[in-house]
Length: 465
Image (cartoon, rainbow, N blue to C red; front, top):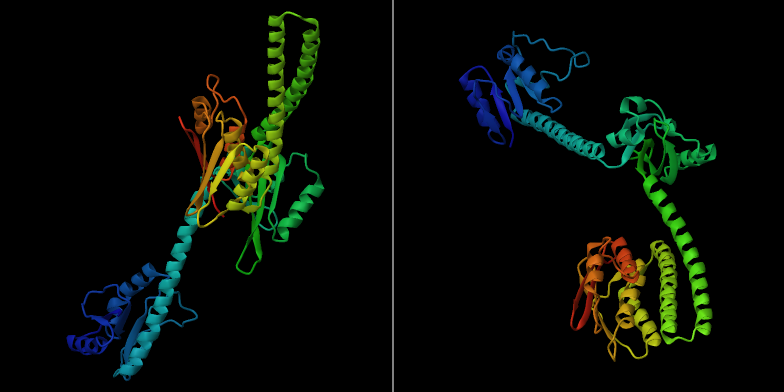
């Protein structure tokens, strides 16, 4: 039901029309103007309420506020209304009915006008929600940690966020109205930019690493994604670019690669030389104590060589695993791992208990599970090494529990992995646990290690697909 105010002269007229309106709506008969869903005003009262009606319509605009004018057939009163095409919006009077009033015609008019009002209210609500979403989006973009810029279809910058200003050194005023070429470093040729432009103009997303130049002339490396902004029909309205600086990460990767190559090369060459000289000395020395020292030297050198090879192997496995984007059934994974280890360690026992709903997992974690299960056997001092593997699904995650009957992981190793940090006075001695931790963390999983007198229990929780 709608609230309809009756602005009619004479109590009798108001009461008579109120009884008619009350059949379907709520009549308001107060003499003072009120905000209502619809107003009915007669000719004689119109001059009195006109200013209030106009003010209300302008306040409520763009919501439609209908007004019906009641005019008598032979009335001498005159109400001057502007032509619809020439009038300023919103119009003061939206429809006219003639007295004596035809009830059915009046209700048809009221229904049509109220329906129009509801449509405008719905449109206004939609517009308000869109504005709220736009404000939330702008607020998110303004506070995003990524540098973001928006251009028109000609590549002219129309917006940059504060992170862009901080990253590039160009203020919004300096960037807007220009093209992203203000960041061009010369490292990429014209063909690079032609491929970029061709890709995004086809409606596709472009992602690449690129060397840009700040306002100061300093060069920096970014990971850049550019996507077209399309309307409901798929027409491109502009482009949005997001940039993350990776200069420090790229330099660290280069440094680690160089250090790894040099250290592995030197360790292998110098270690082999030391082992060879130790072998020669072993043939020349007859003193048992001296021979014992030489064997210790050889054992430690071999340990260093083994660590170097394992580090290289771990690096290769990580590189292969992180590019592996396939899914596998967890039950099949554990079966393959334990079957392979059973052949390699015939004295060991493997027991696998799977839940009723075998989940599908990211195959990146398979080498991590292999490492953790094999560790339970390799480092066992039991006469009959045993590893129990149990799986349990909990909604969107699965937990793989690996329990062995070995001596347990040293507290220092466990603390380092759980803290995910190595310190000068507290660090792990091996790479296997780190390798497993990196892969599990990469897919959004978690690892929990518990050790007691009965062995080690490792719970690996990973997302399921």
